[in-house]
Length: 229
Ligand SMILES: Cc1cc2nc3c(=O)[nH]c(=O)nc-3n(C[C@H](O)[C@H](O)[C@H](O)COP(=O)(O)OP(=O)(O)OC[C@H]3O[C@@H](n4cnc5c(N)ncnc54)[C@H](O)[C@@H]3O)c2cc1C
Image (cartoon, rainbow, N blue to C red):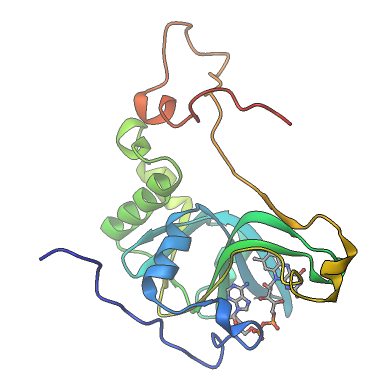
């Protein structure tokens, strides 16, 4: 049988229920998966010594688990297991330029994941989680680069966060004041799209000159030159 995968509603909890702009909620697990699959940098919010700390960091996902890693010396990772954290992922798709400053906005896709992470100690899961993280950022790189040694693994902390409690919010489309009184101002309004693209690989100057990037790196650059405006 073919067709779309079956709908899997995101569980709604008091924390994940949107209060403002509820119509912008992504309500299906596929919405969450799409936001997470489109990025590799998240922000980990954790309370350290009674104060919030928000850490930009890499992530990877595997099924129902989001993995985060870092040095065993990193306080934010060390404090996270046993405490509730919030991980956010944000993609900005454009600036929404309205007639009034008040109605200016952003087109975006964002996700917030709540939970109590666990430290991964099982060696097989640790390797699999690190593979996820590597492949999320650079597909093909896990098989290309040297894998972590035992010493490197011991110096790396890996956290696993279940994707059980999450919210998604998505804004698309033009400004909201096109049919209001400010439309009579005669001002331009609309969306300035924002695109992120990979550039041509820049070889390490210490490489021998005849070593090209592997296809999984070289092929990621956007085709053709980007003309600045
Ligand atoms: C790039 C970007 C820029 C933004 N700029 C602004 C701004 O300048 N001013 C502003 O007021 N808002 C902005 N927002 C929207 C902002 O993230 C909040 O959604 C909004 O401020 C409502 O906050 P709240 O606490 O009232 O949400 P509530 O609706 O009370 O939040 C309830 C729950 O909904 C979920 N939720 C709320 N917002 C999001 C989200 N963005 N993504 C995923 N889940 C969410 C969370 O689980 C949260 O606990 C921006 C969003 C993005 C992605």
